[in-house]
Image (tube, rainbow, N blue to C red; front, side):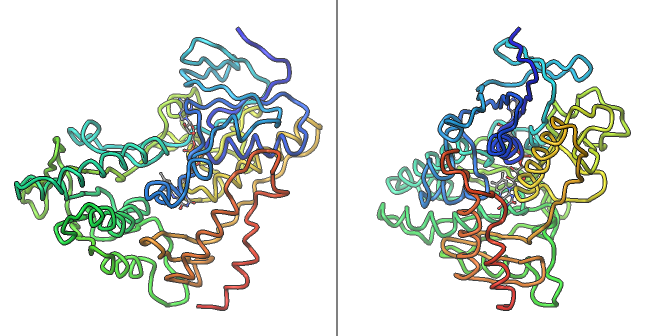
Length: 423
Ligand SMILES: Cc1cc2nc3c(=O)[nH]c(=O)nc-3n(C[C@H](O)[C@H](O)[C@H](O)COP(=O)(O)OP(=O)(O)OC[C@H]3O[C@@H](n4cnc5c(N)ncnc54)[C@H](O)[C@@H]3O)c2cc1C
């Protein structure tokens, strides 16, 4: 068993875990820090669309942990966490390595949920990591190449049809990106772009359900998104009130108004939902400190109520006091709050409540087009919205520790303030 005295283990190197480790290192935290993730690279999810389209590179939005953490003193282990025993303070990895800890940070995020739809896991593409973005890009390029060479009209239409299941933020952003991107790729191959179809499928008739509405009476972000999806190079088709019931290779079945229908599509992307990471849902924590779906309910200090040495944040936890969305902007702020409290704990000081502020919603609505719903009051669309979104995320991209910015906070607050009079 590998064991370190006064060790802090961070499980999961996403927005919460990576930012916890970076802050601890930056503040010269006295305990040893070990960060464990099953992947060797950090996925900067909000910019995965730019990675898919080739607008951004590996180093920018899908960097290696070893590069990011070089010289930081944080030990990185690439491995899968198999089990966590909170009462014995013991973590077992897939490689059979075991770790004990003095403090633990649970930052394992959430996992995609298929709602029991037959064939969905086997025949759809997820879009949650850099690796999945690469896989989808390769597949799409292959489909376009095949389509450009096939005389069989039915086969060509199947190759040129993309169905995206789920019209939350990820589904909408993916649809908007592909509706501009695929025509560019297909035109380069000499294909007829009019034959491309992008279909957005949603169970309810409302898109972006979890995004807040503007409070100033202007168009809602939903209206803006629908308009933008209609205005892409290839207008996105909407199939709402449709429940996907089965997915097979190259086709899906759905139920709309009690009618079973089918779509033939060589690409089916699944963005329909998330659920608690099974490792988190199965933790030995009293039922009252978990939600029905298995997310952890933490104290305002981000500690587990029954284990004060354990912190949890981001998508795997809900701060008991607040109803915060599962977003990167919440996750990294919670990561910073956890780091500050670990430092306080090590110094015998009083812990503080996490102070998470929501700056609004930023959505990519096509190549070069976005909407920024600042503080959910001011909506900035089109190219300026795009600039705000890009600048915001570029400022947040984690850089190797030797370039670490004084704060990874929303330095962009200034831009937000400058633009709050624009709308
Ligand atoms: C395509 C996409 C676009 C998004 N766009 C935005 C956006 O524009 N704005 C925004 O605010 N939010 C966005 N989000 C949401 C945001 O990415 C998440 O809310 C955020 O990543 C949550 O951070 P986290 O640290 O809790 O989890 P994650 O970032 O998911 O990190 C969890 C980490 O745990 C690791 N892990 C999980 N299980 C194990 C295991 N068993 N062993 C080892 N490692 C494990 C994973 O590899 C991962 O690195 C987007 C999400 C997606 C998928």
